[in-house]
Image 1 (cartoon, rainbow, N blue to C red):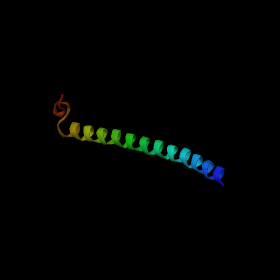
Image 2: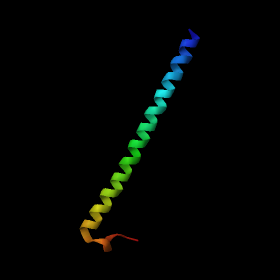
Image 3: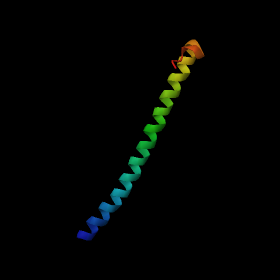
Image 4: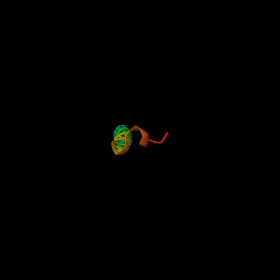
Length: 53
């Protein structure tokens, strides 16, 4: 019985790690998308001169 619990926990751990990696990737891509959209809007409002350097 103890071995089954350990095996299941190890299996769940690998699955949880994969899910965390997927969430991390989604958040990263979402962050890049937000920055890109904000930059596009800023450029559309006033052209290149409207972007602070």
